Length: 334
Image 1 (cartoon, rainbow, N blue to C red):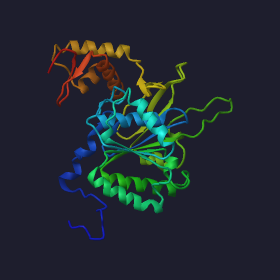
Image 2: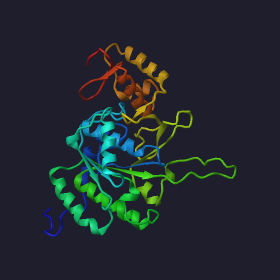
Image 3: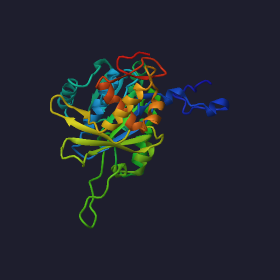
Image 4: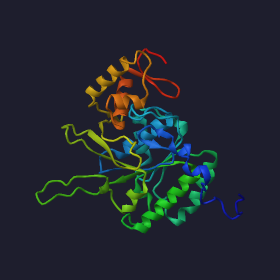
């Protein structure tokens, strides 16, 4: 098919015949197992001062270096990141990365930090800058684009369906040209109380603005206080809205600050870890794949990733180097 000389990009992909029932491999591959897949559009939401920018930055660092996110969720390969910081001083943003890089591996060559308050994705006056970035992307395409925060990255009222749809269309188009996944950092509405004065239950549906935001994303993480703990630095990362059912949720975290600065997973799976160890011992050095462990140890997908991450950090369990991956007790080889 020949492109029209006035058309820079063909606006569709056509599937027919056998292609109608074949899942494109590039869309199915994970960037972070259990967290982020190629070409996903993901939203990360939280109230103020929960640490959502810290968590997004930590994810970006792990992606850039190909190291496990939260020391638990495998990153499949070092990834080029474009991080658009639409608020905050440049010095503060870079200082945060410096403190984080003391605990979280950062590949500086794969990380581009764009700082600036003037650029708005859906502002027509910024179209020339998007076209400039498209040219840049031909030589250095990002695999992940992070936009932080949404309210400063979008022109207009976030409660307006039209403004939100225009923002989503613009960023989806740019991401499609680059072949990138997108992570959008966003705020939640303020908590409300019932007639008894108690705080109403929260969910990702409390994201601020148009309902089109939640409808448009593949999944949405929301970061909240871990209310079962007295430690004010503990958080819980949930994922209520997800289309595939294969995204990790209910991850208990603790904010480590000020220097180094990062989130660490808090263990709550002693019994589950013991079941996995016992199960792998019974394999007599043959190991087991993820599906076998999840079934025989009675672990949900999210819990499986957390448990195996903790066991690997404790050097109790290793994973084979090549696919199909097999998990073994440390010291065994496959």
